[in-house]
Image (cartoon, rainbow, N blue to C red):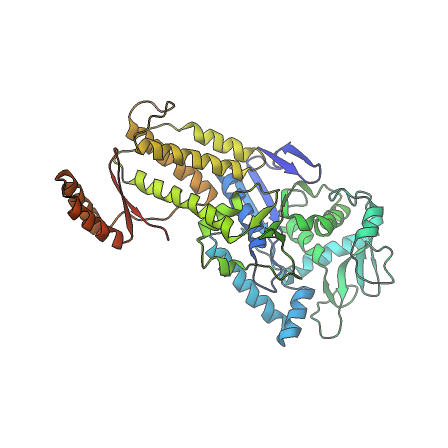
Length: 460
């Protein structure tokens, strides 16, 4: 398996720290609002990546934090006249609810920032004791110039970063790039005790403390959205390596941006689409297929039109699997070449777009064989080849977590189809059409092919 590493800007051979195991940390939500379709791209991709790693035989430990104390949470609570903890609980519950609706498996560990303060304080103390952090009037800061490798992850030099960074105003900071590890309490804000004074953690220190506790000081993969490369992940790397004197992460995976109707999502434009709204109109499988239809590192444009196009593809997969399920027989003890191609695509920097294309090719072959079209690469019994394709399509769909859900046709529909076939033999087409409409009224589509008659549950 090969993965693109943001740090090296190269596709590298993947070698886990512990053979047979993969440890992943991905940045989770800041719980001050519902999560939007852009957030769901990151959550969905890492959920699918975890599914694939398991398929390839790895034991996976996946950690994703929940930031439940932050300026955004405090400000939202002030605006609504409620406790900050009420906001955090409300949107943490909503996040878990929406994740489940999206058929995204919860992480193995979901640490909350407010429950991990002791680990953060211990890490900050290490940095202060070693002289890479200092106390200012507003809090404890990491001194960026004490970490020579700062800027390597985002591929910028210190001078460029000094000019372009948005920084907190603090006259006592030694450098504009120095970032808060611990923020001293302001009136009306929540606080925890520390050796330097009451306050709360900075954002970046959370992930360093949590990943070290639940994975190790050096682990395999750290992921998140491309917007987190700088400053969040740059700062994480700096403080972790300065404190532990070990390589922090071996592979950095960053997910590209999602646009909305051709425009970049932004707060000023107000063009966010919440997942809990879109899931009312499309199944979790369709949304996942849409997200997987582009390579994870590249951009993707969310629009109803684009999702509708993906829905057509999902419908074809569902209808084809329904047809194949109605054929007698078992799959032969062999695989089509599609399985190897599928694995090759995902092994090469997790190319889900190419992998989906391979699923579509297998579906198209199955449709053509059902229609009696000759395909040279398939020899022997047609039904045996169809059952092989059924097994392979299901296997690939399960890995990508896009498996259609359907049940066997109702007994009444089956009886009507038998009667229709009898009427067709007798050339009583008027009666057959009447019975066909009755089957349609039950929500089924009917197909009569050389391979047999198929009853398809229609997707709306």
